[in-house]
Image (cartoon, rainbow, N blue to C red; front, side, top):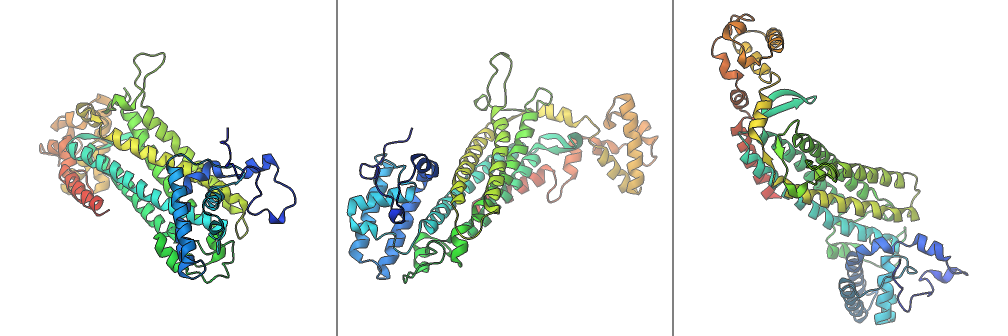
Length: 470
């Protein structure tokens, strides 16, 4: 159910109604209205209007007394909305006309002068950019919070050995801390992508008016400074019509959600009885209505599912824009709901993930046992042979034969006797067992980006510096 309209706006003529001879059909009125969802932009709409009025006054287009009336009136409208004492009107279509009408009702003709030199086309583009700029800042903070949780976990588990996988098959031993740092790096790129995107968001459309600019002597650089934009948009047609900034943000959000979805998949696997690598806190799991033993990893499952929702919003926005001629078209009313939903879900996923990762418990012995299976130190044996002077391809073949024996016998390489190993190469000596241990394997990869615990701790230190730098 829609809320009732303003007393003076119900059934009132539209602000644009001069050219029309018949009222808007009631269904069409509701169908074309956007106020149900764009009302969330009200703070930014009022912020933009205050800056616009201030600029008009400085340019002598408005009198200072009128400007003061407008600013005071807009601040009063904002206070009413903040307090929940404002009634939104469907007949007034959108957040812009609701605010402007309330302003005019409060201060009279001065309110009617506010729209001088602008259009709803450049107004809404400005509002969305102001809103999205702030949301990007909040999202980047949320990413950093999740990254900080990962660093704490990585530091705690820097020595914890686990199997590293390729093709979901045991490949080589790694440390759990090293694995967490892989996710940190993905999120760091996501954070950087959003910072880069923010620069293109932070361009001001205001002053483009409907599509061609305005005949009034406005100062767009002043308005941009008042609103904290880097600079005004260069072309009025482009300023009001394109939504590539929203598409770019949603693309960055989709990549971020893809990363969280991959992370979720691993947590779901690791929390299963088959892997049993980690325990997720009960706070982030649910039970079954029929099976008493179940502990379902609902949070990572839901995050994994929400990735498809965000991917869909990206495709929706691309499709929305692909057929539009210049300049503004009503199609662009459809940009807000997917954009709002993307932001809301992204922030929710990041918040719950940061909290969840702060309460993950590692089953260290289970991970170590799994790492000891699947001949995960086979590459270490090949490297050992190379250091003994055997070409790598020959070493690869020798180790492959040793693995084949282990498969037949049901024994890992470290469980083969020295005589059995020397049967494959006389260059193998008793010191080989040092490289066949899990700890020896991870410690040997002691270089930048490697899984050695010392390198993991060094990477954590560098990562903390990056987070501190913002």
